[in-house]
Amino acid sequence: MGSMKHCLVYVCALILFCVSPSGADQTDPDLDDLFDDLATTSDGRTAETIQDRIQDIWRETESDSIDLLMNRAIVAQGEGDYETALIHFDDVVDLAPNYAEGWNRRATLLYVMERYDESVRDIERVVALEPRHFGAWAGLGKIFLEYGNEQKALDAFRKALAVNPHLTDIAELVEKMSPDVEGRGI
Image (cartoon, rainbow, N blue to C red; front, side, top):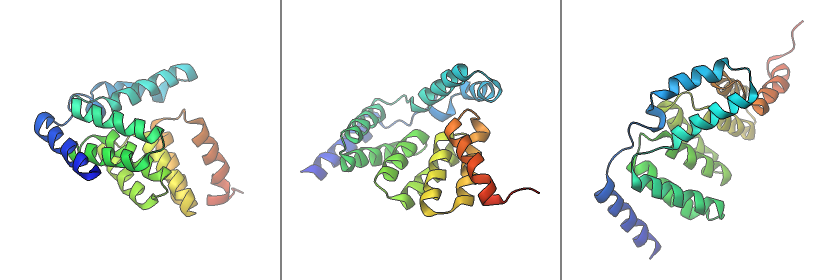
């Protein structure tokens, strides 16, 4: 019954709303200015506002079906129903393969489910679509820490900071890890 319902939702979405999100998400032309502002502001509150706006844009779609599936997945994940959330995120990336936030949300869920290899693959797709996705880079760094690969973790964290220097937790990790990973200067 569950797979039949899953299939029905997918087919209906494909038939009724088979449009890829466009004009929003990671392709929004406003993102360039927002990232420039994020890189140059020294005010923490302003940075937080800019970061929130960037994330809002990344979540935007022009597809009611993608919005519905994303919302259902997020609700299911919040309720701890990871399998249902995964089904919905799978549908999102199938219907909108160029929508970076769909891949990012699924990568996050896979991380929570401790399916790290799959999460890494999704993160690679996220950063291929939106190389400035600081959350994806930070998540990748955390996975590499789980694997015990501190050098790769440090590299990923630095990529996150290169686009968003206001990630204080990540900056602290980089500062703490750098001497042990790369050695101390003389």
